[in-house]
Length: 383
Image (tube, rainbow, N blue to C red; front, side, top):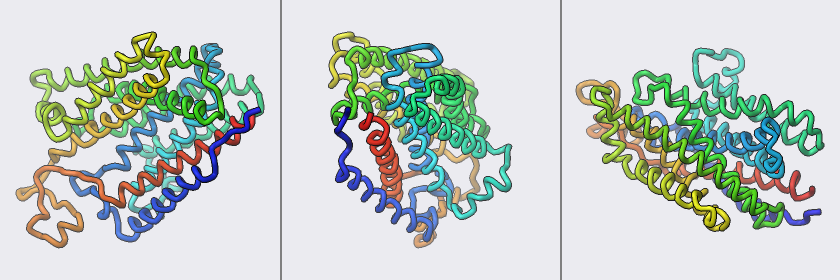
């Protein structure tokens, strides 16, 4: 029987970060979203960017757990429970980030009483809720040892895991006024969910092994690393398709492509290409390097950071150049504009997250970490 678990002081540390995040969120509710780095031009910021990342991270765990039963991959069953726990924690973080991004959180009940089914936001909240319910049921039946129910649920969980990130992609891909407007957006999101989700699962499994809560077999680790290398190739292929389409003469995306390759968001694009795709692939493609845990940690961490950078350049490149503005530009709507009327107009978008915005995000992520640790203590450490 396992006796080790995440300690109370460690959980308490993250609880303190949650408390700080809640305080900053209350401050945001009192003063409005003007306390963030968002403006009338950059209407989305760190919250939505991190939301996109964690929706993808959540998908990887459930895909691995579901594949164990749908495709009869017995080796994956050994990590199915940690995979579902990781998936549950990440989807909770994603859902909370949507809530903190809303300026009128007190009216959230209107989503239930008067939903607008033409809004992709309604689709996203519905699929996230469904996804969370599936995770909870999956974990509950795994704990009870009801393999038949877990097997049947897996046939629903696998397509839902893919759909949850597809719906997120459609929120962007259906906006005809932005450069996101493309049919390839959903495949791009799913591809990045596969590699980042599997990468965060590997990091979680190695952490559980390090703490002593569960053991990760080196052979299984190498197999998951090989699968991760394949996912990286798929992700790179879709990015190449996107860049080629934008660069093709007459595509009308020359400005956005220029910003992405050599402009303000170029550092995030090239970090993903070099550090988030190329280096991890070179590490994972080697059987000898896949057997070293330090190499798996390096490759997995770089992949997650690379996908995080991908979310940054994908989101903010389209906000640099407004799709419409008047003679003087667009009023930014920030507190700085109120104190300096001469600087209230802008012709290009700029964004930098504020301290309260960062602390709220850290607080929300800390909730996810606590969920992961508590569920690991309850459902794995006591097995």
